[in-house]
Image (cartoon, rainbow, N blue to C red; front, side, top):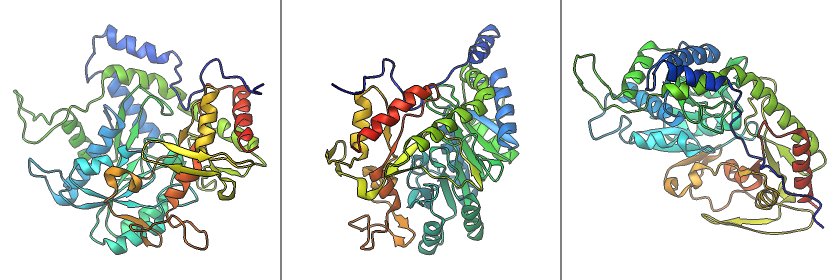
Length: 424
């Protein structure tokens, strides 16, 4: 007889948590007939988010990707001038970018006709490795733009990254889509780059079902993004357009949902942190570690709790382009087995982000590790066992755990026991 029973209600990876205030502001938009990409909800949300994030200006956009796109476009224009009508502002220039992230972080580089150079990951926070970034500037000294993400809500080594970019005169686009509410040395992520982006996607720490925000301390930058996001309409009595624009503005209805969510951001973070700590305690004695963070300098938002299986506790696992295979082995397991077991009991986990340099669409792009160029390496490990390609190693051995803040402690205890059973 199976010792576990499937959960009656699915345990999600990270689903929206609504409180009721969201509906209040959506109904307010209906009552005032502001069913458009302008209105009181948008204006107030921009004010609230800018104040919370500690920046001077916020521009509400349709999604985090739109925010990143316009941030990258603006950086390209400042660095290289306005693009020709048939070209992006990067026009073949290389851009350094986080390697282990969702592709929304790096796709805007391609939108603007740039070439991403992927920078390997470090162990301490699972974010961009400053040593690999230094090596990248040695290899590509002309690069003037960096796009960096904070993985799973954990701030990276921000001071080191900024110092390196400052030394080389490079602008920074900060992707804080996953880390809104996380702090580094007391300052909110989303304010460390020259241009910054956050996301309100349905699975984020707070949500509008969609939506994003461009953050900056530059009024000129905010005005430019606001103009681009509304089809670049000029200040004329008719529809005058002198440059390419986009329909990227946030809906006043979506803004109402996010406006209603904002008072609960810190509460959500506390709930997510409790989930992380409960996993950490529940996994004691197992050959695993949780996704790490710098406890001295940073406070993550704990968006997703993740675990990494010790190398000698891994059973054999192979991943093709679309399907994984593994060989069960007593006392050992792998991410595939754990995820399949969770699914069997109606709980959702997820693999770690597959590094960008391993993605079919980006396999020809440069990839730089702390020891130099990572391209052409046939294996992720050198003879001493130390990972050369850190991102590939974390992807191979890591997984995202059910992290929904509506999961009860009793339900999480069952999740922990299910995972422990995979090592038996």
